[in-house]
Image (cartoon, rainbow, N blue to C red; front, top):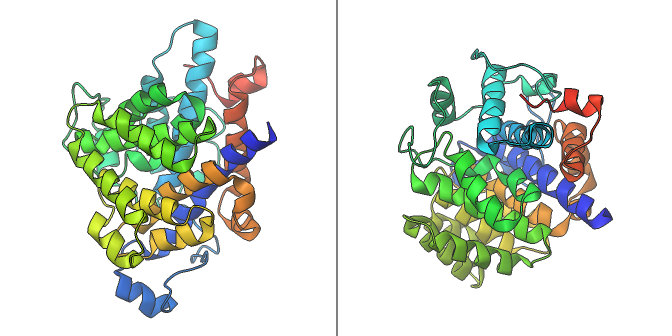
Length: 344
């Protein structure tokens, strides 16, 4: 149980740390990053003007994904039937409300009550517009053709909660709530599978290869699977990281963000700090590639592999660790739990 707790906590806090490390440089080119932070780029967490090491919408939505899963479990236990993506969708509507956009969804549960989540940190336009539409996107009836990384960057908790194949399917379905392009949701399924495999005891490369097999059984997988295969190849070569990452893309779209994270996690798998530094120092979506790398290696290595000061300093650290522990518990038959994760 101690190892499982280390993995769950490592996954969620690792993602938050990667997100926070990349946030100050998200919209900078690599030359500008080096000009501002030195030849090695950004290498440590930086406090924002708020005097906090800020998380972004990536971590916010990850937390609301976890909340949705726990609320779905509560509903399923008490009502006997539940559609997990529908409950997660309602949690995303709660996140939308925290961004200053009203919705009629219930404003209950402990996640919504966390003041620090009611901050606008460059939320993705696709997530905002899809959730504002009043419709829930599904794979069979997509809302749009977006393959932005806003689907994959939030779905790691699904891998903590479900076995590999179910995690893959639910990862796809929960990403498709807002992202309708196959590459926008298949990469989320792949990440969920990888996390689930790591929790089940697979080694890092085996979990990625397993996700690739599952991915290739899906229609329209080619764009995503080819880039993951390229990341696997690049990680085995002694290449310059900047050039290797540039060949995979910038991470603004789902398959690129996942591929960059896989490259960084594989190449630096014993050293999560170095993996995260490499994952955020490039031209593209630094906070998302950092977050995904943190989810993967945090789940693989556990929280003890992460610098203690990073764990302590990142915004909402205590709340994220509590959420990770609740993901292990899954359900409690108590009034306190029902108030914390109400089933609608």
